[in-house]
Image (cartoon, rainbow, N blue to C red; front, side, top):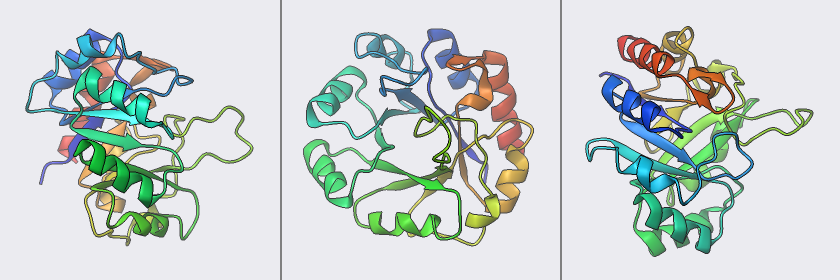
Length: 215
């Protein structure tokens, strides 16, 4: 099976188009205001309009309230809501009841036992995202997109009861090895296709997607 690819943190028409042309299955739009990949509610609809129906739009949030989710949903009509905060299962169930949109819950991984923390979302999430958990000593760390790689062996034998995706410091150079070790059927990249924080490269996007799908 060909690996599915999510390009996250897109903020320009050129990189949206490049991601679609190169074969990405998911495009992520970041609504976390302190992120260098932040897209405003006003700018997001123009970007979302460029995404064909065959590609899934993902809205990324961090402990957002209902008003923020209302704005995201209205702006881009996402196919998936990605939750990167400390949202408990009850919050996910409430969001699912409110919007009827599939939910992706990010799970930070840094040490043994971390992957299993995602098990509490078995009945509330539709998809898990295993990402690198930033160390507490990392000043200004974002919930994701820090360019950090975690020890892939930590999830090599873990198989949650739902689809899952691998993230965390992936690049065109290491994605094949990451897939080999973890068995991931889908991967998520942000900083690994950038020339600077928040500045995606159409060329790097194409190279990454080719590497992931050839793995």
